[in-house]
Image 1 (tube, rainbow, N blue to C red):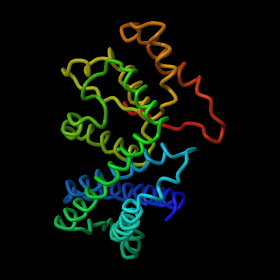
Image 2: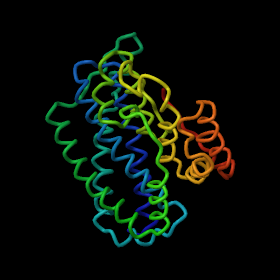
Image 3: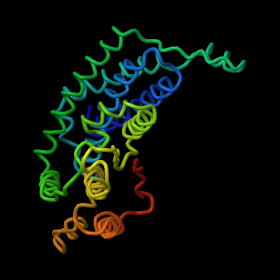
Image 4: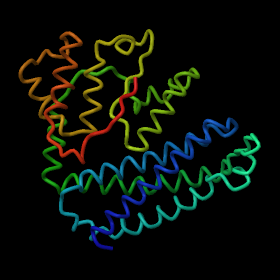
Length: 278
């Protein structure tokens, strides 16, 4: 498989992962008995999609020829896509479900056993490990990516620990109430589909998460990870005012988010479309 074909395989796996994530969300809203298994599988599929989406972004506009030398990735992408296709077929509601829905009967049932979910999670974890190694290799061999990573390291803003969706703290706490569970699940779906720009989960009594003092700096940090083109604008704001994180919230919003976004040069066909969840 040449580099371009492998890039196409990445897109294919990303696409089917998004469909599976959406199916899992449908089950989460209608099936209560297997909630833990559904969330576990959805999270693992979303991780695979997120990693491949990152690799795809790094490859866009660059030479993809080196991919043809990674036969292990090529074979794994084929196998991963095959397994995800089978999983999607298992999860798609059948004709019986559609027929019964005409009569107002909600008969959606989670089709996988706990053992089947465990087997799939283990398999996906194997692919995840390989994808991470390829991502690291790409970062090392691509000088532009190296420069980008170093810029991200330099531009550091104070954040509210645990406020972002992908924080381990929030992953545990988000399920404490029905309202937070819904918000966390929706955010997970957005992240799995590549639509999540940033997130901030407020929590009473949790230091900087209980107020807005670190709100815009946390949002800006999340956005930098997903939109690297923001980095020069945010660095310029820090160079002009190193104490911007302690200024009025209006000033933080304008200088760390609004102005850097307005300075990004993109064609209309490449317009950014991300969602911020609060």
